Length: 239
Image 1: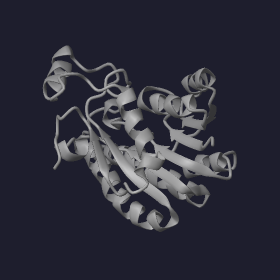
Image 2: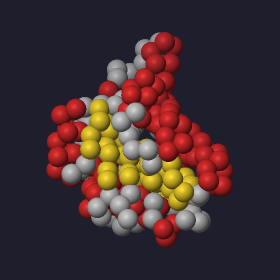
Image 3: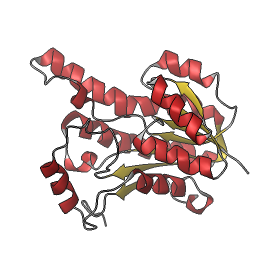
């Protein structure tokens, strides 16, 4: 049976790969994002439905919800990224506060708002998958703190949604190539060091993350919830 899938930040990179994975199985996929042009181009390629929506803006989310299906089987909170790459370095307390709030909004508040807005539409069985980051464990200023907050919030979310037949998990990528994350500012030396830090000696790719998300949203993972699944090639191990 086809499911209704919502992927935020679904136009490019990891979000696009996730949307493609579900669409390829015949699911009805909705992708959202702030940039209309790449969003609609991806939707046309995948046979998905696209809605322009900034997941940090409550008003835009309210408008979005009115257009979505009454039942949502899987919500993937992928929208986010390190907003420090888009801002000048803080020079005073006000700009420092603005920089931290930007990362918290993009990576934590966006997921909280989208999940809350769709909570009554999530089905039993259903799944919420949040895209975290290895930065939550390694430390990376406001971005790492925001992703750590996402993982902490997911623990509470899992406890709240579990009795309703809905799982909630985090997929935590390491370095993933072929995305816009580094805004073309990643040097060859830095890229080489990120690859050398893995056990697999290769960069991750968006399909690696999509496969993990697909598993967590599948019938095979109904007893997997409240977890952080690291997909980092062994750069940071767990036990």
